[in-house]
Length: 230
Length: 230
DNA sequence: ACCTCGCAAATTTGATCATATTATCTGGAA
DNA sequence: TTCCAGATAATATGATCAAATTTGCGAGGT
Image (tube, rainbow over all chains, first blue to last red; front, side, top):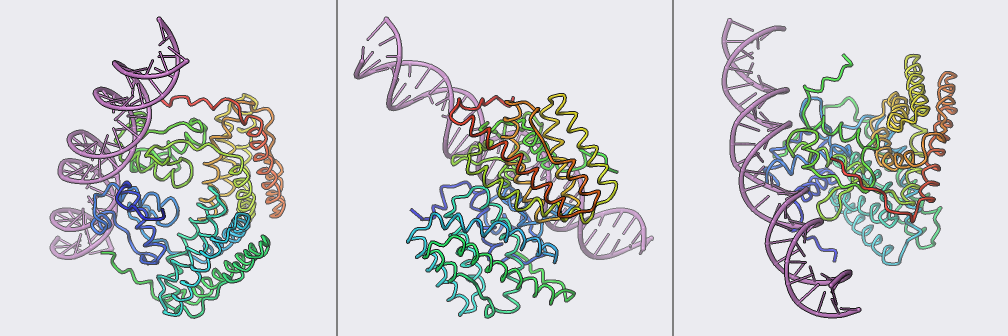
């Protein structure tokens, strides 16, 4: 039931998912230009579906439409980081609280598995897998809230933060990446809504403060490498 | 310089703006199907730019992609209204607070003009102009916050609420539509951040509670009329 | 005799592609 | 430095294919 029928869906959806994953995994560096024809070459297919995928991501803030007709991966500024922290702190704990109302044993065990994979990725220094697992942990929890409004908004915030997160992990390694996942799971087991929300809030604060500190540190250094996508 | 050069921009941007305005003005009823070819006919041009505009709006929640490949204007449920209220209450007052830091006399006079137009629209029972002015009032204020993160998120919430708002105004008229715009302007004049945020919060609460009450009232009645777009 | 249900043809609509057009960027020469 | 030409990539269109809905017809039941 959870399989990935990749062949019976419109191409623009598959391309959207692929591009999305690339962004979430940090495969695209901040500032890197994204070309329609380049992606069409890589992912196979014509320009029209790629166009649609890029428009969607652009509307979500995952890509930036420069005044001319170029598209690139956005580079976060310090005020934007602060806004992201505020917005995430405002919405995600509530989403977690709503989710904890619908918690099931299978959800908890799923979260445990994801967190185990996350810790393993940290041990191995596998940044990509770490980012994937971290995203998956939060989204698996939030999905249980069955929210059609808050979840897309929060998703947009994650898409915006991911490229910068990747840069930071790549620069400083995965050693100093504490999280509040165990606290979250414990609170879920105790069916303590408020505690779940608190744990998530702390997790967010920790992560965003981390980004902020590193951005402050690296500000004014050399421009980020704009490795070609092709 | 501030004119509307409608001819020197890509077509998909113009179509996006047009569709967006139709949604914000309530020209599209909740549940109404939106066809690519139909829009291409109406707005002139080919299907590809329309496609892109629809993808963008879909990602913002302004349109709903049904499992098949049809797109329609979303119908809000009660839990979704509650989520929208929560999300707006969480973000918009902060946006207003940030904006009030950058307030200028010309901004205040602009807001006064908009509010005058709004009151005039209420008097005349001009629902469309009322919706436009109300949106413009909030967005003109929020834009002063110079926020790239919060503003798009909030914009998405407005796009989601507008179709339902229109239905309610159309059903119950524009008489009983109180707002806190005067209080907001007064607080801006006094450069009282907290008061601005409070006024906006009250404005939102009032509006969303209104929608909620009407939705509760009309629930279970006949399905909303799906008037043709052409 | 009339109504309802279901299946199949027909029409509408969406998806993808190849291509022509246009705008932007790049390099070099005046 | 400024300007012009070539290159590169985005935009937009129409055609073609595929999928879904709607329409219409006939059989079976009331």
